[in-house]
Amino acid sequence: MTGDWEKLKRDPRFVWPAFIALALLLLALPFVADWALGRAWVRIAAFVLLYVMLALGLNIVVGYAGLLDLGYVAFFAVGAYFYALLASPHFGVHLPFWLLLPLGAAVACVFGVLLGAPTLRLRGDYLAIVTLGFGEIIRIFLVNLNAPVNITNGPQGVNLIDPIRLGDFSLAQAHAFLGISFPTVYNYYYLFLALTLFVIFVSMRLEHSRIGRAWVAIREDEVAAAAMGINTRNVKLLAFAMGASFGGVSGGLFAGFQGFVSPESFTIIESIMILCMVVLGGMGHIPGVILGVVLLVILPEALRYLGPLQQWLIGRVLADPADLRLLVFGLALILVMLLRPSGMWPSQVRRRELSATGNPARNGPTSVRDAGE
Amino acid sequence: MLEARGLKVSYGGINAVKGIDLEVGRGELVTLIGCNGAGKSTTLKALAGLLRPAAGRIHYNGSDITARPAFELVRRGLALVPEGRGVFGRLTVEENLAMGAYSRRDRARVDADFERVYERFPRLAERRRQPAGTLSGGEQQMLAIGRALMSRPQLLLLDEPSMGLAPLMVQKIFETIRAIAQEGVTLLLVEQNARLALEASHRGYVMDSGVITLADSAPRLLGNPQVRQAYLGE
Image (cartoon, rainbow over all chains, first blue to last red; front, side, top):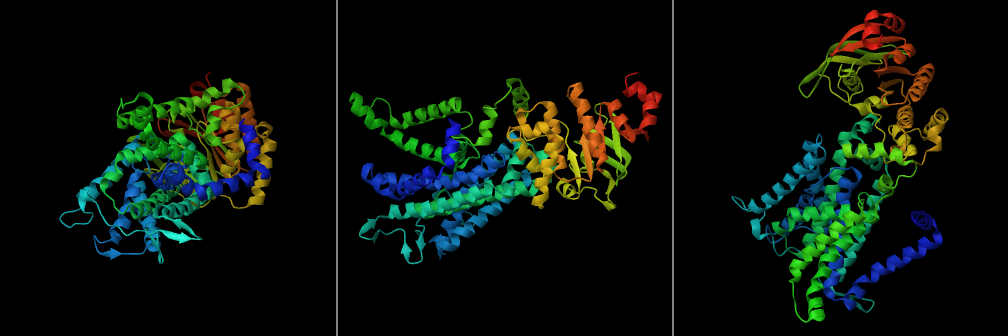
């Protein structure tokens, strides 16, 4: 089956029509979603795009370089607060979006190196614990940096953040174009779509670059990677920095989109959700990660309908949909892990580990090695 | 070509190598033999820049390379085949070999070297699209050696190339090692299979508990009653 798919992927008669259909679908999506499901779903679609950027950033660290990062949301927070503080009445500073976005990415990048540098010698569980701590440190700073000098405005967060403006074009106003009106959410959707495509493009280029191969080598065997002539220190730092900068960009967009940020948005659960998207979708595989994001953002939203569904089926709400949501969500995660252990849409490299062809006796040592990693 | 003086290496508080002198001349095949835990692999890792020595100096091609990182040494032609082979299990044979040429920029010659490795190891050519983790132990060792050759080394350090291999495969690996030496690559070998290693080598060192206890030509070591008793099982 995978063989057919590989062949299909290379067939221009299939690729171009599929590509054009996908592009049209993405362009028409806000209209379709708005018409069929309501305005809220356009907002959810924008969030899907935001999370795609975020997850692709984490995918560099976890998927490509194999460094388990449980505090990734910290970079999202850094990007969001950077934007919030420099484009809101909080300090009375209102820097333009085109300046804040790259600067936010750069600041997050610096934080990525700050986290990466002391953890270079750590691996696996130990790295996970340190990154977990780092994520919490950032959040606790955000909560407490309101005294003696009020920098972050503490648990109240920063309000009235400037909406995103591109020159004279404000995304916070409805615009009419060719006689079609584009409400605010649509504007954000299209901006996020453009940036997401850019992030996907960068990710793809990175994956097939020299650095991408170096990341894979480090993930597979760090000592051997060093013996290949790979500067493991710099290459690992680069993974942290690149991943963090993606997080920073998404953070800035999030702040501008929401108009409000508070430390509550950057809890550990958020880190774990992003990690789930990467792992469930298929670590190190861009289409897999995107699929993971789409499902994990949409599923909790879709499960809100469990209440009306019960009403319709049995005439009353038997179980609170808020409780059911977590239950069903947890079940879905467990099912995916059982049925598709290497992700729903794994990369070829990951797939090899499970479906290694040839002599089954020879698969023995492979699994032993993997277990020992 | 390679010279270590007073080399000391500690591993998490344990002094694994306690001040050794070691030399490898250009074109030589030198073996370091010794029991498990004698400090052979640690020595090799320090020479390859994977471990930082606690004391002593290492010179390579006339320059001081003490504590220089491994990636820099690979570029200068010093390659290591790590213990336990260290192939990238989920990457294909071909991808593994490409990794070996990571620090090279001369694309045309890299392509020619691919062919040379495949000529030397026809088994790898047959399995070039197969994940390295599905190869047999011997094939993985061939791949590890082929991968190191892809960096065009002047000096190749081999850590226990015969470990865990069937006797026939061990013979084959040693034939390969001799062939590589004849092509002008200098080799430093760490082995537990002392007889085969010394038979292939010019000179040898015997290491015990972090110090070098004997250094002599390989034939003389093979004739040494102490060595025969302790390492050749006689």
